[in-house]
Structure formats: C-alpha cells, structure tokens
Amino acid sequence: MGKATLLLVVLAARPLAALLERRIHMRKLTPLLVVLGLAGSLWATDPMLGKWKLNLAQSKFSPGYPTPKQEMVVSEAVGDQIKLTITGTAANGSPISLKGTYPSQGGIARAAEGGPPLPAGVTIVFTAVAPGNVYETFLKDGKQIRFNHLVVSKDGKVKQETMKGISDGGKPVDELLVWEKQ
Image 1 (spheres, one colour):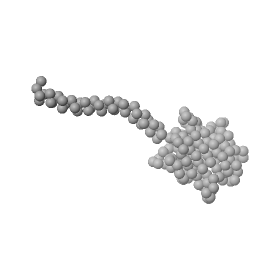
Image 2: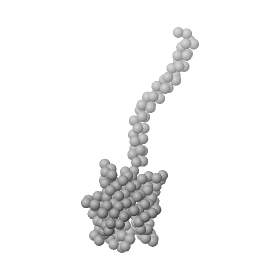
Image 3: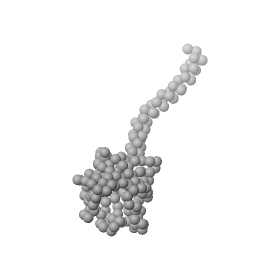
Image 4: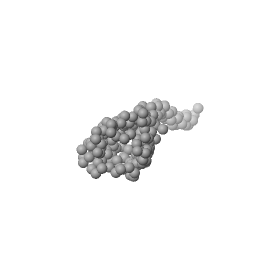
C-alpha cells in the first residue's frame, strides 16, 4: 500500500469514525428522548377534555337544590382556551344549555351563551394544578364564596367534582358530582 493510498484510507476513516461515534451517542440518547417526548405529550393531553355524563346515582346533591334529570359536559381545546358545552334536562323538565370558555392554563371564565348570566360581581377563576386537576374559585366582589375541585381518576374514566361554599342565592353548597367519560 502506497503513502497516497494510506492517506486516503486514513482520511476516509475519520468521517466514518465520527459517524460511528455519533451513532453510539444517539443510541444512548434515543431512550431519553423517547421518554421526554412521551412525558411532553402526556402533559399536553388534558384528561378533562372530552364528553362527560353526570352519574346521578353516585352524585350527592345539597338539600334544597333541584337535581337535574340528566346532564352532559363536553370540553374541548380551542387554541389556548377550553370550550365547555353543558346540556341536559333540569328537574322541572326544561332544557339545560350553557356554553363558556376558560384559559387552558388557568384564568377567568367567560360565559358565552345560554343559561342564566353570572350575578353582578361574580367571577369564576380557573386554576389548572396539573392535567386532570382543576380548581374553580367563585368570587363575589373579590371575596371567595365557593370553590369546585375537579379531579380525573388515573384511568381517565371518572371525574369527581367537589363543590363547597355558598350559592349565588346565599344557600350553603356541599356537593359531590360524579362524571363518567363517554
């Protein structure tokens, strides 16, 4: 083998060695990148989203409040907002229809259409603790009057909503709503 041939073999081997070295590093990094990618996609998928039906038999309502005959909540991501559509049948047989939005990372809710408007001075603030764990704080003239805590089960099939405080009409509220994913 001549000097020129040996020089060509050495020069050709350098890029090959660098390529092999990069492949070895990539093999080490690939599992880490896969785990990080899955973690990011899991955080991005909010288990609150979807269609939820109220389980009347498992729910516990405050005395003196009319229990709906049926209720359904559909929540969907629209940009950086969560759009809620609530439908059903009230205790008196009248239809329930309400739509609203709240920021997916938390913030002030906005009623869009249907249902009674929020009483004067009442604001609902959503706080997203983690995917599947949300607080709704009801404020009247800046003072907390009620909170709801919504938690989705680990299997994603059941959502429990605990409601405590005072209603818009001044009555005590202490309820547990059980929602099933449809």
